[in-house]
Figure 1: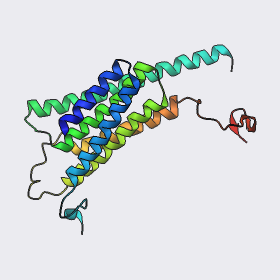
Figure 2: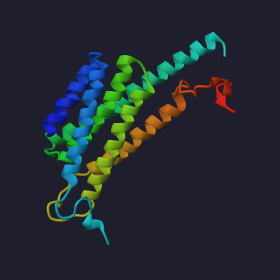
Figure 3: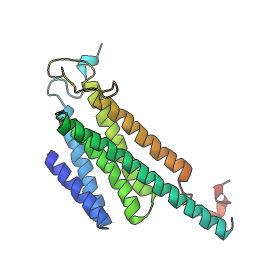
Figure 4: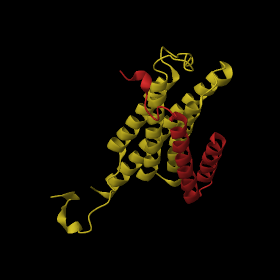
Length: 57
Length: 159
């Protein structure tokens, strides 16, 4: 997943530099959606969900 | 405002925008270079959240690059702001993950000037958001959307 994110990000930067604005914006939007998805997947715990039990009093 | 004053103000705004973009890109390049030095020079392997923070910083660069490539627009600044907010969210979450040592989180990397990487990331994200806000306040344009009935405006401002 991380490789896909970096690939779409690189493609967005290259297409932006080549002047293909619409394609670049679509690619950066895909990058952001994939990044948010991976972030939520990384921080989710099957037991605690998104909570942080080690800092709860 | 006369035509020559408008032209002078436009030139000044263009130069300030260029300087802002170059300065922000230089800062991000320095941060990413430092991160790569820590990874390859000091053997600090990045975690997935660290990599997502790099993605967010490069996303900020995307907005800045569009400004250089296609001319300055608030929309491009919006792309940069969007990724700055994403950087802040990921960095704060990682700081909270590493805030208390526990099994699996005993070592959270070496400190730079007394602060660990996720905390630096929070500071960088806040600095980026502040930078964008100052840019919009100081060198932003007045070309915003106007209501359809512009006769209700006096000198471009609502009565």
